[in-house]
Amino acid sequence: MKIGKQTIKLENTPKILNTSSMVGPKEMQGPLSSYFELHTDDIFFGEKSFEKAESKIMKTCVDNLIAKNGLSKEDIDYIFAGDLLNQCISSAYCIRDLNIPFFGLYGACSTFCEGLMLASLFVNAGYAQKVIATTSSHFCSAERQFRMPLEHGNQLSPTAQCTVTASGSALIVPKDVNSDSPYITYVTPGKIVDMGIKDMTNMGAAMAPSAYSTIKAHLQDTGRSIDYYDAIVTGDLGIIGSDILKDLFKEDGLDISEIHNDCGVLIYDKDSQDTHCGGSGCGCMASVFSGYFYEQLKTKKLNKILIVATGALMSPVSSQQGESIPGIAHAVAIENEV
Amino acid sequence: MDMIIELLKVFVTGGLICVIGQILIDKTKLTPARILVIFVTLGVVFTFLGIYAPIVEFGKSGATVPISGFGYSLAKGVMQEVDQIGFLGIFTGGVKACSAGISAAIIFGFLAALFAKPTIK
Amino acid sequence: MDKDINMTDKEYSDYVDKKATNSPMLKHIIMAFLVGGFICVIGQLITNTFMHFGVPKDSATTITTIILIFIGAFLTSINVYSKIGKFAGAGSTIPITGFSNSVVAPAIEFKTEGYVLGLGANMFKIAGPVLVYGITSSVIIGFIYWLIKLFL
Image (tube, rainbow over all chains, first blue to last red; front, side, top):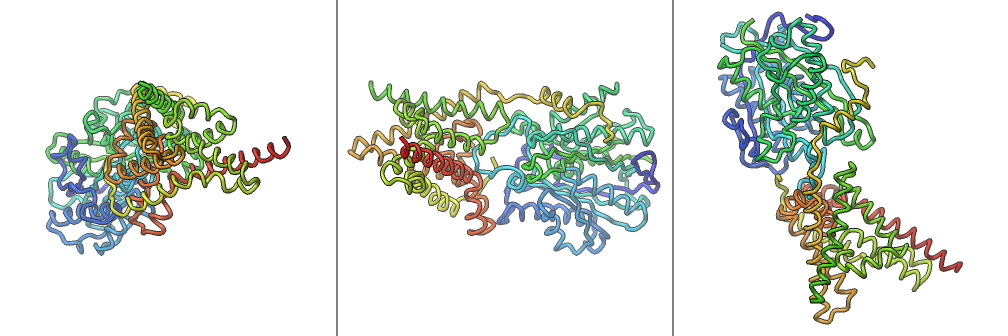
């Protein structure tokens, strides 16, 4: 049911039955390494190209999610998947072998929440019993699509972020499934907010206003205050973007610094890993939520969180044509009790 | 001693040209590809205006090894060829003077690509 | 456009510029100076060596170019040049070894799309503009030079 301007209340509160995450070598050197379920030390993951590697990472992650719940792929009703590559090829080639009805999504780095949102709406409406939402990203395949060849010797701007090599997936089921899993209670799809930032090496600044807009709309629509949540987790605003988000809320007289976390900031250790402003990419929120935050919810260290994946909806073509970067953010409220 | 002074001049000239590039990268939002284009074009124009030759005289490799030196070769080649064969030299001179560099870049690039694999930084 | 944020695009962009950490400029400049100068010195040493053995100056310069391009290509292919570029910046981009790097890097990377449309078509993805604008400007000044000679 739609409430307020843009939020949907899920009366039937679907559950996130389980999650699965897989990361690459660089993410394993980061502070969250112990939370990720699967990892590979080989950026090619035994494949011939980075695109194939990304697809395989996603496939391995989804296979693991299905297998660890004692299911087979025939049990899954639908899958929502997306990635950063042109025409969403990582998802398409991953799902080619799975034989599950598939919705391909593109919301740049916001795709994980977009998928989670749509999957939970499907389950909430009773159209499906088991739906998977998954996304992936790969540093090397993103780098070659959006930036320079890997072996080109250049310096990154200090505001730049580093695409994570990772995939995360979540299995959504109706609430009557017997399991001690967190519920999805509200979803707030975001509007595109574009403040005219054109610098592709400063995506945090381009996306922060959209995160602000979506979080604010969510709070207004639900009538909740900021301290209702134990944590508000943004996707990949990075260090500068997170800072901007805090400033924007400060203008409203709200202090979010205590409860705000950003997956892009959490995934790397910026001093030792030379990742400038932190991680980014579809896989960033997917893996950090599936690995770290889901674990926190299960162990009841956190009980009410709002995850807000942010995306920058530009392409190299639009950037070269001088367009600014449209930002988007989708919010999903996840709670242990309803 | 002469040799050391010569190398010092090379070092300073080459270093300063790179510093100009670095300032452009850091201060403006120009990408390295644009910097290269600006440098090669300025190399051509400055050579034509007679400004670059004295720098080469002074800094030797310090002025010819940076990409502006590529522009210097192009311009010098064109002007020499126009002197020698006239109008046709406009078209043949530049690339002729730089043919070794271009061919080397292509063949070494090709060979390197056959054997190398990209990796994460 | 209705906006939740009480700032104009201009105000926001000025605010972001203030927020953004600046490049460590002094460090960059020193590294660019040292590495750029060093590469040029290597070039001079190669030229001097050939001239010492009686190779004429023009040929020695050409040989130097070829050798430096080889070094750039080699270091790129063993994944070293990108690491040098990270700390040296323009010091490794501007010298001819950087030109070589910008030819080899896309060639290596686009090999996965085949030898013709991948490697072949993308080899000059970054360095192509250098040739386009270098040669174009050289033809223009060649024409002007020819005109000047014609009338003077």
